[in-house]
Image 1 (cartoon, rainbow, N blue to C red):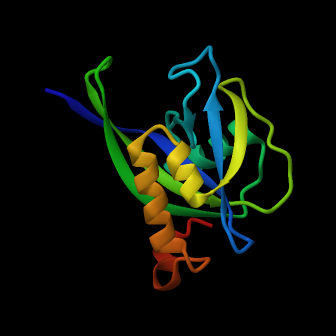
Image 2 (image 1 turned 45 degrees about the horizontal axis):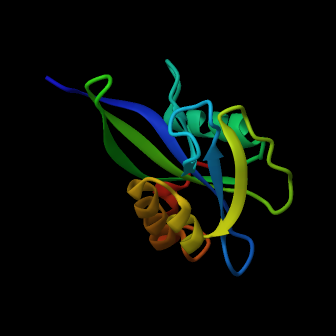
Amino acid sequence: MTDLRVGVVDVYVIRPYREEWLVLALQRATTTRCPGSWETVHGRIEANERPEDAALREVREETGIPVDRLYSITCQPFYLHSLGIVQMAVVFAAFVSEGGDVALGPEHQRYEWLAMEAAASRFTWPREREALQHITILLGTGDAGPAEDVLRVF
């Protein structure tokens, strides 16, 4: 039997305080899995860690950028054949302020701030494109509107 594990977070780091939102795209280093691929902030949930805490930790570790607001967006499953498990990614949108330099961790070699459509085209995984659609639908007005009380983490 294949196990289902909620074990990772995907965090879309967004600069929404402008007419055209910008999304942070990270390019994987050549010494890591999927070398050269483009992705959002992605990482494991540690033991006894809540997904939202993992999201904030991963943004800090992979970018060094402080988060202004954090929203829970969706969950997305994917299969890890090497472990024989279905992994569930908890997806967040992290709104950050303009400015502030990105301090990349060792997993990434480059970054770019891209418009939503350009980020969707750049990301390797289709689930990342789908998550950007969810973010646009849920947060396109700048907040979650009538769902703010259930989607906004802080």
